[in-house]
Image 1 (cartoon, one colour):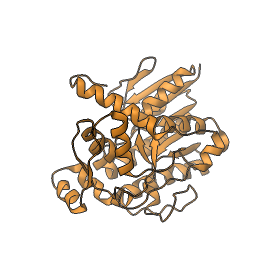
Image 2 (cartoon, helix red, strand yellow):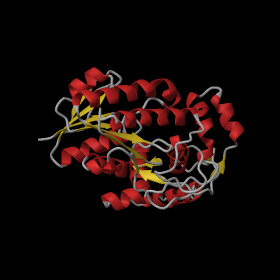
Image 3 (cartoon, one colour):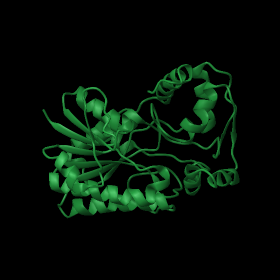
Image 4 (cartoon, helix red, strand yellow):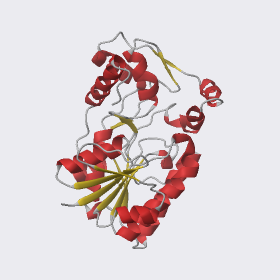
Length: 313
């Protein structure tokens, strides 16, 4: 039975762990709290401690990096986490496959492809760029084997985005939503389950290492269209959604750390933000989930929470 190590018990890490268990692997899920779904070994540990992480990953085929610091603390918390993961991969000899995003590309005119240069225009983008460069440098030096899997804003259970935080809950309660975004700009969405499938596919294909891959994602959809679809699937009143001015987001940032941290990535929401994921679709034969199916999954969980607010999912 192959040992696999997953770092991070969020939506992606949990999805990866479940897929690996379903196919018969032994899975060790490492997080600060040590929780894990049924059939998975949960271990509480600090992933920035590379030596300890290496001990936990001894004999493992792969380390799946699915963790992420709180959004406002990326600049301070990502570098030690990235260093700990590289250290663990070097000592344990496990393949390191990391869950990334699109911030390192910066503002792009046109579809975002894997071969584009990394030209971040935000602090968080600079951090993600450096974490990847450090891992890739270790790979090219023969110290580790690694790859990165990048997706756009997530859909699916547990996904956190302006849609899941500001739009979906309002629609389920028949309330108006306000979002700091161009509501009609096309935007790519990535299903959490497809992130997990791509991570596993990349980990098992040695020809896929040493580069970044984009998660197969469906055709882009604007926030307005997504809100309309959500209301139709939920059976609620037609969606009422408006654009929050950027100054309002800045004002919110005076008292809310997450809002403050979101200002520098407004370029992703005020114009088309489209992911080109053709390379991974061809290489791994992964067909992305339909947006409607991903939204229906979120609605089912959101409706249950509304009906039973004391129940955690």
